Length: 372
Ligand SMILES: Cc1ncc(COP(=O)(O)O)c(C=O)c1O
Image (cartoon, rainbow, N blue to C red; front, side, top):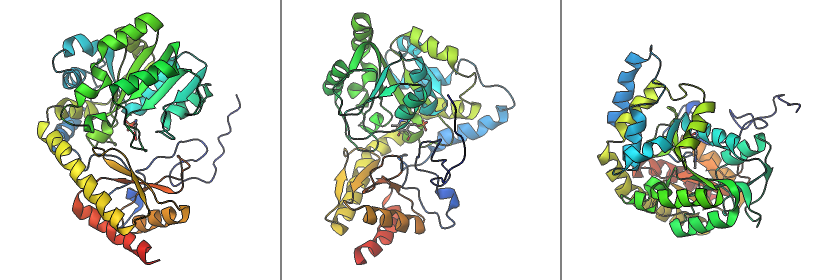
């Protein structure tokens, strides 16, 4: 296949022709930077203890990282399955961000059709990887079962969320026998202290039965760069249906793809219970306070997404208004994510949940919009 790699007009640092647009790239260019509202990371920033562990690990970074990703991998397994991690950890593998694993799993998947989840849009890396790997792409409205079906739950950016019975019904209706279902639960741990009871990660019997009876492989993908606010470190994992699937990924994964610093961070962060308690307690309060403030200012805007999420998906219902909001926020050092590039939903903006003082700056910037 001839590959046209000539540079084209880009969206900021992204090469619009070759790469998928994401938020989080503007902060370094802003001399008046205050806070990044364009990403979905945890408002509490990097957990301090884990940050220290990561910093100390630089001392050992003249050595190769462990090829088996231990002890960080077992520590994450203990976090995911406190009671049964010894039985489950062989199904787990870490990656250089979820992005690496998304691409690896799709490369291993049975060829044919790819389909997204039921929502009108979702995080785009699954689609990008499917396209690059020669899959025929179906839309969310298609009634055809896919050879590979990828559902982001909770869905970034729309904020929709399926509980387990709905999720299982979707898998039953949308995946071909012998196919792959990749369920992205990166944002699911925000659910509550009981997140494990609502997660597919704990549904081993269901996953085994589906594989035994229909040959359907269910993978549960996590980006850990959002919950633990470490996008620069690159940290993700995937829970595979069986240990054989995990080994198949390991076989094609580049060695040492998760570096020493990221492994040290992960090994420590899973024990930071206070950080998660704050996350579960304050994220919904700060989110509601931000929605209330913006709704008061802009009664015509629509606010979407579940109450526990780390972002708000907003339909301003006017592409010019959305563009102006993005420009004003950027100019005030508080960039927000436009729904235009990437999602092609130009009336939408995505705003991260942040502490009230930071929201003051955003609200101050958007006041100009009220006056126009
Ligand atoms: C739902 C979802 N999955 C996966 C990723 C990939 O994250 P990373 O490669 O940083 O782990 C993201 C990043 O925004 C995301 O929102």
